[in-house]
Length: 472
Ligand SMILES: [Zn+2]
Image (cartoon, rainbow, N blue to C red; front, side, top):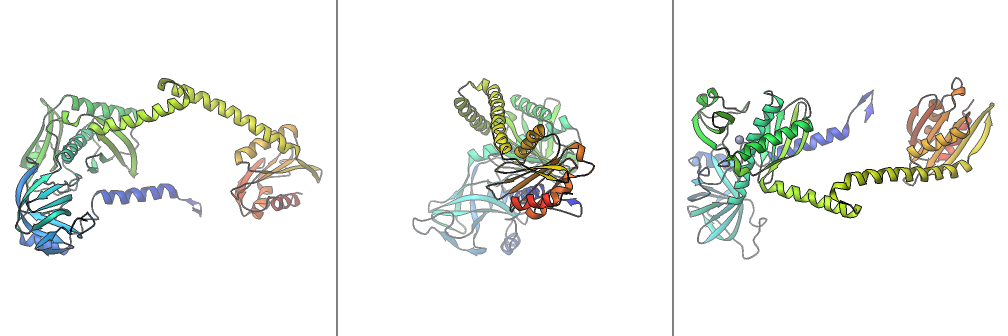
């Protein structure tokens, strides 16, 4: 898009828009509409008690059953064809719960809520009106009634991975500040069982070298197996002790702090309500998978931990093995082998283009116009690059005159190049001549007095005639 001299990078713009949308999606804002039903429950019920810092399972009492935004007495499985899509939008609210509700960038827990008579699969957990923890999901079998006493089991394996990713996020922030400087501040984050991402303020891309340093620091803190100590204290006490708070975030008077320390050395000290690994060793390993800009002065790092790092390594190892088998060489020789192949390919391409140039040259037409020789040829399926090569080839054989080459391509594109020999440049201008051809082709292009190129669509013979007629 270009008008009035203002150009807009549409690809970059669209990419940013897409990322903005993803960010909103990841933040779960689409789900946190806070429908009327949640305000009603917020007024009726005492705040849900979260017991998931210590426990992965607990017993609790169902206080509300919600189906399609209405409170109901029970939800029931309908025969054997139950699935997530049958039975509508179902939620359970209990007096207490070990399920973590999506908050502070940490995803909600999944798991099972059950009685002897029924089983409910929890696919996500959210908190509404800052007090009602609601378990979203679907009934797998039997029924669940309001006031049932239930067993609540989170998916512990998944939670372990989430814990590791959350603690790794704190180590990442500390390492970023250590390597890039204290100006690094958190601008957003999200983590689930597969990966973590961290948005932060920094005006330029993080260099490859700095990324390696950051990765190394985080992995060293993991190897030291440092304790992760979570403690509640007053907000003032925490901030005075140097805990990092998120700018613009509202905190209660009593806050939870998460501290990672190596003896007297504080590695990380943050205000955070998330669930964490018991010690840094539980993270296993840490690997940055991407670093990118997501807006002016804001960068995003995505990373993986634990077994995900192994998975990533294996996937890359598989690619290397496949490539080395195709190239019939060892993995260590791939780089050299590819460089050789590329050199070879370039040589062969040049040979082919030379052949094509020779054939085109044999069809070269020559006419006299006002004592100037105009050389012209129409070819098929030449790229702009190919036409430039052919132009050089002709120039080498005919040192003076005007050269016009046009290519009619399979994809409907018509390409044109015009060149003027230096002795004629006071009289003729390639950039001016090509305009007559481009007008015929409805095309765009231009250039200098000596050389011009452009492309459009339409009849190349007509474009050639238009250019010839307008010489002199
Ligand atoms: Zn945190």
